[in-house]
Image (cartoon, rainbow, N blue to C red; front, side, top):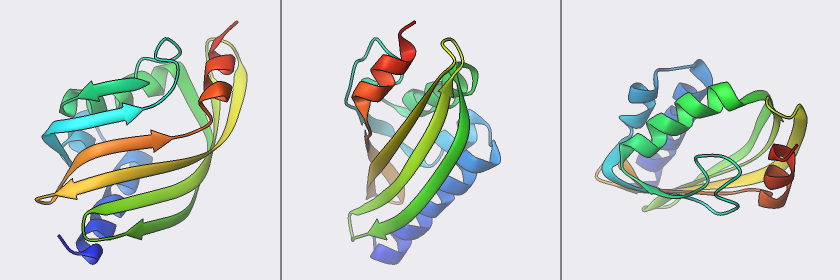
Length: 135
């Protein structure tokens, strides 16, 4: 894949995520053998931790829409190489169960092979996430 191809895939992912596309439609951008990783307290939210397969994306899209409310998503940069795209931004989210707000910078690293996202790594303020999910 070229840098330009990977930029297009990252932008397509952001567009689908922001448009409210169906979980299966968003997951179609990912490899069937996807490796998903969001480091942090895996007991805080169901999508945190290591997961595999497109189901990880589908579950994230479904569960995040019921467990949290996005207040603001600012994408500052989308960068790419021949193997990866990196999304840099800031996210402000309300956890519906607790009413607490998380403000966190984030970086999403997408490894891309054969036109599909094969590895998803999101780095965020995992301490703030864990604290916001506790009553």
